[in-house]
Image (cartoon, helix red, strand yellow):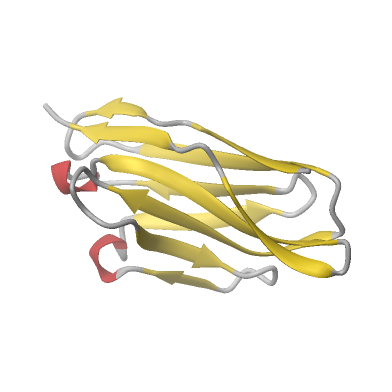
Length: 119
């Protein structure tokens, strides 16, 4: 089994920063893509940031220039550095990992961490 455990969410004022972490544990061969999604109340879950195993990244337009995704392959961990936070960034943030296990690709989700941007 594979588990993704997120941390780093919380309450922050507009303009502030947070750093989310997501660590994968369990039995697997490797991790391909890793992503951060978010879901605000009453809205669909959206892809925020994406990083390949080689470190190539992509972002949704609304966070470009403010958020940065990175990963530490030795620690099987993905990070999301969020700067210049806005109230509209308020959401539950989820990590997703594409894991190579038993000769197949599997997608796993973390439990989510709440980010609230408010004064």
